[in-house]
Amino acid sequence: MFFLPAPQPTSGILEEAVYVCCFYHDGEQEQLLHQAKTDLASQSGRGIYTAAYPYKEFYLAENRHQKYKLQRQPELMEQFSDRYPGFSDFVHSTAAARVNCFLYGYGNKEELKAKVGEMGLSSIGQEKLLSLGTP
Image (cartoon, rainbow, N blue to C red):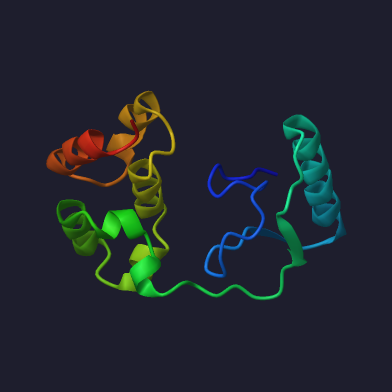
């Protein structure tokens, strides 16, 4: 179980559009989630406001929210558009998800340098991502 660094799980409800929650599939996952929340509360000394719900159904966000940072990089998007002509294929692309994460600053430069060749980008695209991604 992990909690993303932003928004903080200790932050309660920020606004209706940003709601921190986790979903579980079965009793074992529910127990693991509650234990992780308890452990994090102990480590941080703060309350954990991340809600827990049984998984029922998943709804994809609107297209404009999919791989948001990546969609704002025309040079990189052109390469993904060539590779994934259908937007659904782009949304489900692991490579696009990884690029988007690096653009948000997740990971580190060493990891990015090691993985950039595995993302299906041209050498120009790789250089662009190296210049933009992960501080």
